[in-house]
Length: 125
Ligand SMILES: [Zn+2]
Image 1 (spheres, protein in one colour):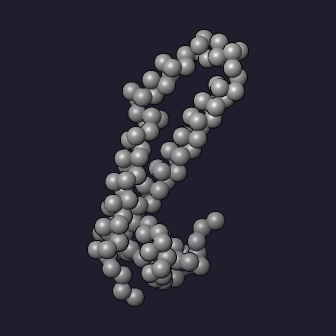
Image 2 (tube, helix red, strand yellow):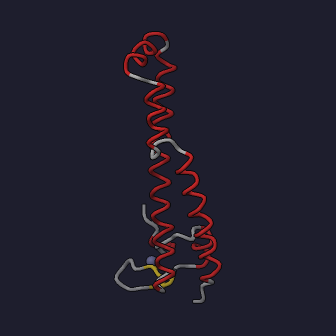
Image 3 (cartoon, protein in one colour):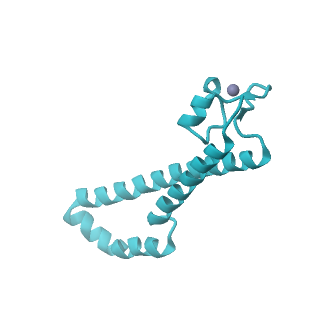
């Protein structure tokens, strides 16, 4: 099967930059912004806020947890994209290795997810 490596490499590189930008824009991995977050909610202040408006604090904590979860998703995605780019370099891109026998990943699958490491039959989860 012929895979247009240049095409997928461009797609993956564009996605990598996008994810890295998104991660950079989030506060969790950024020590400066993280301290901002802490400065906004020091413990005593948080205690006062819980008494004043518990739902408001819950919203903020929820927002933080959501961003934390999103951060995880983005990091996992970035790892997949990096692995796919590495696979292009070493010539193993577009090959599913599940089941003990190497076989091609469908073009439509790569089109939908250029970082896919498995064929349609072996999609994880
Ligand atoms: Zn497979």
